[in-house]
Image 1: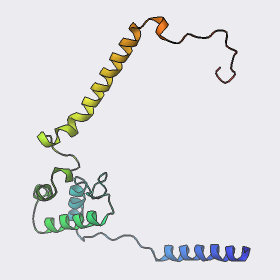
Image 2 (image 1 turned 30 degrees about the horizontal axis):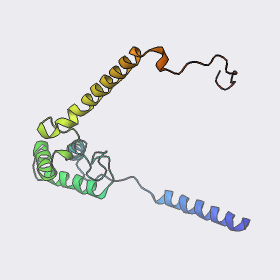
Image 3 (image 1 turned 180 degrees about the horizontal axis):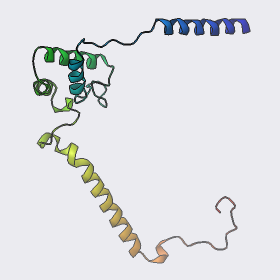
Image 4 (image 1 turned 90 degrees about the horizontal axis):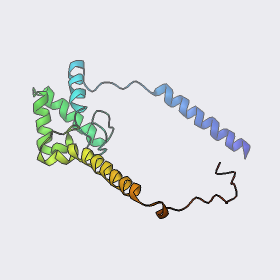
Length: 153
């Protein structure tokens, strides 16, 4: 049993070492570094529709790879950054934008968190105010005759 485990560990280490020898640095998708920089700039402003919490620049999902390729092709065809973003927005809606614009359909995204904080603070204020108005007999009395519990001190 021990020799089998030893052989398995040696085989795994050998496979990992061979894989590391073969591995190479990823090549850029384009020979033009200026074009790649523009692609990455636009890709960092577009949301991955699969991951939804990542930009297509950071995502490794197949759709994100396809969208980056499409952005690259559109830029190679002479379209500017705004035309690419407008095309993606027309095709996928404002959801594809990592920072959606403020308008009627996205107002809840922008105002919602502030409204939730105000409602929470308002509720806390009302509850604490009501509790402060209660008489002392509404609360449980402290039992001074109870034995001291070493876990409570």
